[in-house]
Every structure is written in structure tokens, then in C-alpha cells.
Length: 424
Image (cartoon, rainbow, N blue to C red; front, side, top):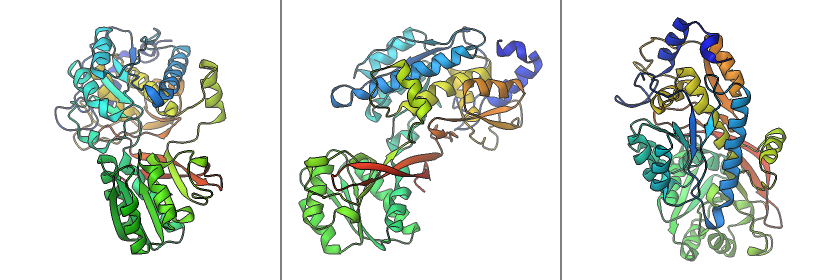
């Protein structure tokens, strides 16, 4: 049954006004009360931008989006009509993909994956008043990118991991810490956040050395000279070489904690037992057996599920936001996303309807629609955990899987940690 038939017209209007416009700067789509302007059909587009070694990410995101749309439509779709998942393409020309999706009348776009391509997508889509929800963007700078309030992401910014890295060091009994970070925004941003988190944890940072990929010997030597109890490696492309140099300096194994970009299945690529006892983290939560089975049913060839949970949640959130607003237009979706994700409205940002209706947790589109029918505000907690978008369209709680390396230099997930999106 369409949601509009389940609620009295006056109730729908009041609830929609209260749910739209929650957070963000003045003039932002996140705070503006949106007039209904959709055509009655919710269209969801995908930007798949991975080629080469990272192309496996396309399959997991596509399977998750298809699964979400399938379940949304099984629950009645949007206003009684099936939600459409627009045909996907794979391209590194993000602007061209965005323009094609605007031409196809997308109301919301899921993607892109690569943070470096986000500006090209945001510029096109926000200008066309299309909501954008990336399941994988992690660059810290995107929190303040000028999107007019149309940009959100269900993945945490890179700096969110800082407090978890510091906690792992402290839990290991260390009092002093050395940080090795790779040159570039990722290394510098995360290393700076680690420094702040370490201080808050009572740890002393005795060295912070930068290196370029393939040239980590000097940085490793600087860390050794400081004689730290533990070392945090913040790296991506240069991680393997840096680990080898740290191992030569006697600072690998149990003394080492790896950032998310440095975690990999190194195996024989490193010296025997180089990483035995080392710990590392990866963003997200381990997919439940049921979720994995549902994804494989959509794509029997699926082998990796990275960002699948975040993609699934992005699609469901978009549909719940459209249901809450009783409108499928991108402006209405953007104005409702903070509220239906469980975000807390800022002062003066509750929309024209006054105070927010009481919230109720829900974990599926069907359940969230039920919450709306009861006259309450849905707080969607999904496969990736709690969302709770903030004023920047960022999630406010980040989840991480913790792994410990064995003597074979391979990681095994053996724990979980959570942190705020600010890295605290």
C-alpha cells in the first residue's frame, strides 16, 4: 500500500515538513524545506569508477545496490511504484557519468568510490539538485566541500581511525609511540589525527617521520633512534616497503599497528614472521552470514564484499528519505536524509514543522516505512552500523574490524572497535 494512503493527508504534510531540513549551513539543501517536485518515480543511479586492480569493488557495490532496490520494491516501492536502478556504466570520467545520470533523470546517485573523483560528481549533480551518497569516499577534505548540502557519505573519513589506532597501541601496553606516515594528504591527515588521539590517551609521540614510497629507510631509522614501545604505520602504496624497513630496524611484529591503507595479505611478500603479532584495522563491520548470502544470490560470482554494506545502506537511506518527504526529488531527499539517518537537528534547523517527531530505530526499508505510518521519525541503522549524518553529511560513528597477523604474514579479523567521525 502506498504510504500516502496509510496516513491522513494532514499527518503526511506535517510529518514531511518536520522531517525535511535538519542540519547544515544556511542555504543548504540539508536545512531548506523542500517543496514536492518529483515526478513520482524514484530513480537511483550508480557511479562505478574503479578500473584495474580495484575493479572488484564495482561488483560488490552493484550487487548491494541491486539487493537494496529489490527489497525496497518487495516492500511496495516508492508511493506504490517500483524504484528504478538506472543502468550502470564503469568509467573514470566521473563528470561524464554524472551528466549521463542527470539526463536519465536520476533523483539520487550512489558513488563515486574514489575520493579524488568526488568533486567532479558533486559539481555536476549538486548543480542539477541531485542528492549524492558515496559509500566509499574517505578523504577528510570532502567534509567541507561545497555541495550545497547535496553530498553525503556512508563511509567514515580517514581521520576517524586515529583514536582506534591509538587505542590499539595503548591496549598493547605501550607508553611511547613513533608514527611513520607516507607523503600525501592521507598520510599527513591521519598522522596528525593520531598525534592528537595519542595525546588524549596519555601516549607520548617520540617520533613522526614522513617517507615516500620505496624510500622508507631513513624514516625507519629515525623511529628506531627514538626507541618507541610501538609504531603506527600510516601508508598506502608504500606500506610493504616501509614494513620491510621497520622489520630490518627491529620495529615490526608485535610493535607495529597498521592504518587501514596499510593492511593487506602480504604473505611471502615479506620476510618470515615479519608481521607476526602486528595489528591492523579496516573500516566497516564484517558482513553477517545472511547479508553475504543475499548478496551472493544477486551475484553468484561475488568474491569480495568491500563497501557492500555501505552501498546497501546508501540506497535504503535514499528510499526512506523519499518516503519521509513523500517526494522523490533530489532536493526533498537531501532535506530528509539527516533526520531519517538518526542525525540530531541543530538549533533552528528543525524545518517549518517545528520540533521533530519521536524517533524509532529501524533496520530495513519495510520497517522504516512502518515507523512513518505510525507518525514517528525513522532512525535507520543498517548493515554498516549506525549512520546519524551530521552537518557535513558525514556519519558520526565509524566502525572498524581489527585484525592480528599470524606467522604467515596474513591478517585474521579478531575484534571490532568504534570511533567518532572526527577521530576522537
